Length: 157
Image 1 (cartoon, rainbow, N blue to C red):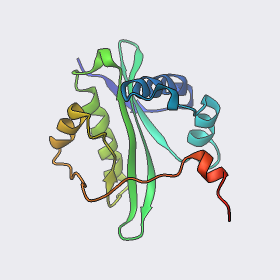
Image 2 (image 1 turned 135 degrees about the vertical axis):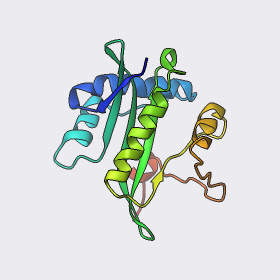
Image 3 (image 1 turned 90 degrees about the horizontal axis):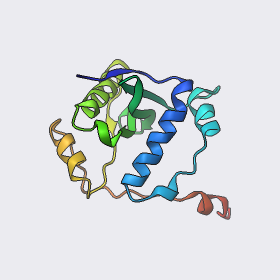
Image 4 (image 1 turned 60 degrees about the vertical axis):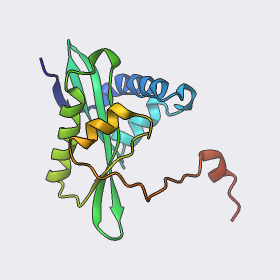
């Protein structure tokens, strides 16, 4: 039995946030989720919406989601970034991740983006094996960098 994959709506966000918190626990960082439902509503459905998502439904509930947004490459042009694919632990191994990933790839194709990017933790072997099935390019020469909110707030100009 496969899941129903559909575009995400504002009323889905409480379940999406629940999935995000479940992912954070899986990734050994449960205290790192600070985004609020109000922020997600503003950022996904406000005047300047910056992300979109798909949800997977099974057994009359949301059991997975994939969140993505548009980014811009100075070399390539319009690109898409897949922020997360999350499937509830009890629903893994039902090909829901595949359905969500393929929905994002289809959206990327429809939007005519030049590149679809995402990150995967180096210890998440099941995810790495999943993406290898799609012949994904793993960029070992690139290093991810970030400034966190506190550093940005304290930045002296």
